[in-house]
Length: 105
Image (cartoon, rainbow, N blue to C red; front, side):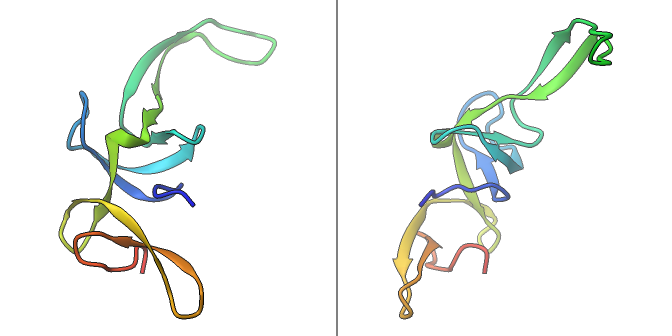
């Protein structure tokens, strides 16, 4: 079970975009995530008339390592670490380490 999933609101904790908040758009692999509006680069694209692609410079979100992002806790309005807890009915849920609240509840 992953600590950071698609759709989670995260805060970048290191790097050039430190402090920026965004939503996880997708998981590239087990260790990388793409966050909307964070780690943007300009990419030069050649025109391809067969595919209908116009050339030019586009902005694109690049992947970040999961160790460089942390889940955003709306109760404390800060980045927070995540742990796991078993509920009485046997379900495994993610909880914030600072206050013990269930993530997404």
